[in-house]
Amino acid sequence: MTREEKYLGRIILKTKFYEADKQSYEDLFTKIMQNQDSNFKQVKPQGRLGDGKCDGFNEKTGDYFQVYAPEDLNGNETVMLSKMNSSIVGLLEFWKERNFEVKKFNYVVKDDYKNVYPLIYTNAKKIAVKYKVECEIILCKDIEDIFMSLEEDKMIYVLGGMIPIADNISNFEYDTMNDVVNHLKERKARNILEKIPSNPNFDNKIIFNSLSEVISEFLNIGQRQNFAINDFFQLNSKFIKEDLREIFSTLYEEGKEFIPKSETKNDEIFQYIVEKSSPNEKQSTYDAIFVLIAYYFEYCDIFETPN
Image (cartoon, rainbow, N blue to C red; front, side, top):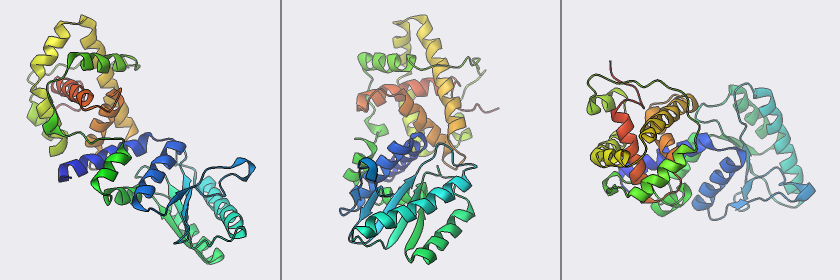
């Protein structure tokens, strides 16, 4: 796997973290752990017994994992500490009673790369001393590190089947483009005024938005098919072009609000738009999406325009 593919895989994973609810986050974590550790076992809740306050474990190492993925981590410090304490009590009661040795309690927190309050770490130390077990807080960045250490085929499996490669973008198929457009038209769009630049400069805009070389390559290759997308618009209703402008503008605004600040935020927004635009994970579908994104990027409907 090339450096560029690994980078894009990382961006795709981060986007999946942001979008995940509790169950999908737990499933994604489990998928990564099972591919990293053949001895990792997922726990399925069983009636009134529940899951023994454990979402997965490695019996050989004595590692036990509990996932905490609230909708909003901010302001939930007291709740989080309470859940953390009840989790370790319930876990020890359930598993030790059944002759399983618990050596380490891993509290897996969906922090969306924002980190957690210091009291969470001090509470982990209290738990370690009180119950004589190791206790570790595992955040998104830690799961990402595990993911990045996986073999190529396992990384691709975790992400759902493929990592798009810019060099593989081919001329889009009109039927596929129609599928993408129909999928996008199902989304609600905000009423965003069109901004028409006097002299748009594609390369300057890429630099201005601090987009990586990996993402820039998708945009540049997509732009080369402008002639084809213009033909597509001419063959369809005049309203399609405007509808898509509003939809892509809305997706961009959503991405800005949804994705936390980081050095790679704009790359993550790009991937967020790709994910929301895709009805499936076929290469031909991604080809069509990259051409559309490049078109609306050039005409300044998505991402910021240099002054």
